[in-house]
Figure 1 (cartoon, rainbow, N blue to C red):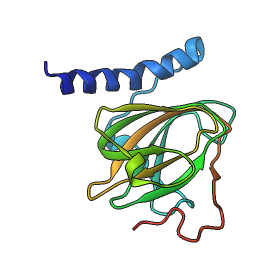
Figure 2: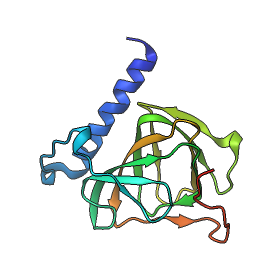
Figure 3: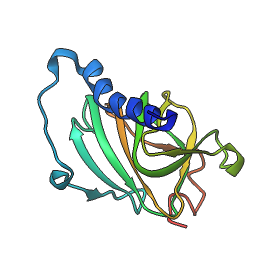
Length: 158
């Protein structure tokens, strides 16, 4: 097994194990194939789609969801009130930490990659030509706070 395959396997395993550790005995059985996922566009930021797997970010308690980022998308600096874990399912997501968007701060995370966002850590996300699908685990109720809400270009496809 190559190092990249090993890392991908570990990342995908964390997708499964992390929610189990969060819920413990209250975790209920869910089995979904990709064809059974119900993707819905979100009102904001425009261009994203989401499918809830377990729980909901709008309700108290743990949640697991997938977010589909379109190609050539920028999610400008923002933060969330809850600790979160992420696994890139497909494509490549470019992630940077900080309150100012900076290409030099971006790290390319391809399918199988894993990252965390502690509560209230400012970050930004970018996709290039292929877009990305990311699995998110957190604790609701959650939300998003913009670093610069007056910026007119926030959360728009490039």
